[in-house]
Amino acid sequence: MSEVRGFGRTGGTKDAYLGAAQVGDFKPKVRIQMMIDDDMVQPIVDAIQATACRGEAGEGKIFVSHVVDAIRIRTGEHGHDAL
Image (cartoon, rainbow, N blue to C red; front, side, top):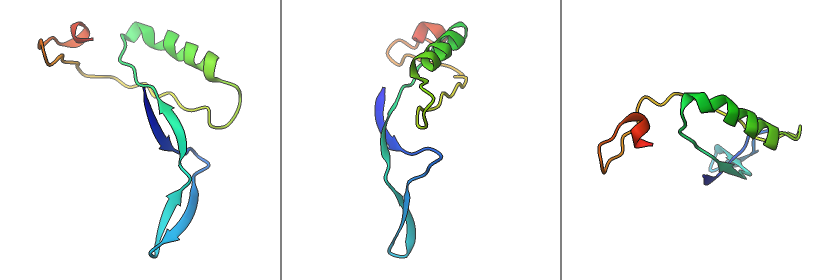
């Protein structure tokens, strides 16, 4: 988990600084990143949606992507063993 700053579709405020357009008003956000087995993806997505959805703008997004490999540097383990 990490604290990040950004904005969604609403964008931030647009100002000019030294003749160049600047976007401000970044909002504090939380980014949660997980590496999980494929069979756990849907239950975790369902749990996040059930918990986080209030029907309001700014509730966030879920991105699902594939990880090609995971390597534990200390032991050299690959794949599931590295998790």
